[in-house]
Amino acid sequence: MVNSQNNSASRIGSLTQLQWLAVALVLVTGVLHVYAGVVEGRVPVALAGVGYAGALVLFFGDYRRRLLYLIGVPYTAVQFPLWIVAKTEYGVVDYVDKAAQAVLIVVLVYLYLNAPSE
Image (cartoon, rainbow, N blue to C red; front, side, top):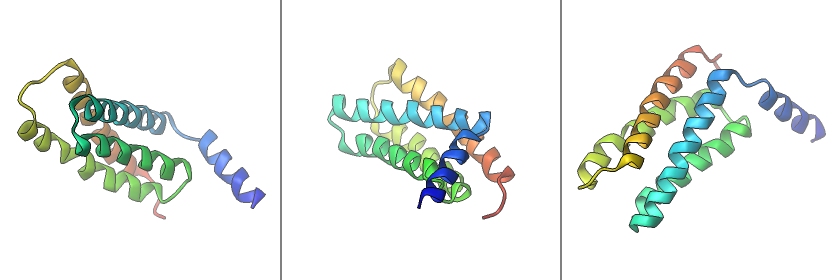
């Protein structure tokens, strides 16, 4: 048990800069989704943010990171058309979120393609 905790902690310490960028982008979009969902009263938007939080828990738990990268791409990409259909007014927060998501998709694709097979 202690060995697995040490192994997980050492894996967190050995994250690449690109992985840390992905973590930061997930935090940004996750927090913005929870905020927007609460402020606008849109439960699905807040739940999308909670989904990002769950992904971070799995990521830091070292659970099948390559699979997380792969699932993260469509999970994030599908939010673009949903945003266009669901929103009637767009603000700065919306554009910051979508910019973060666009970069996140590119980073996740790169991480997936360059991650060792599990």
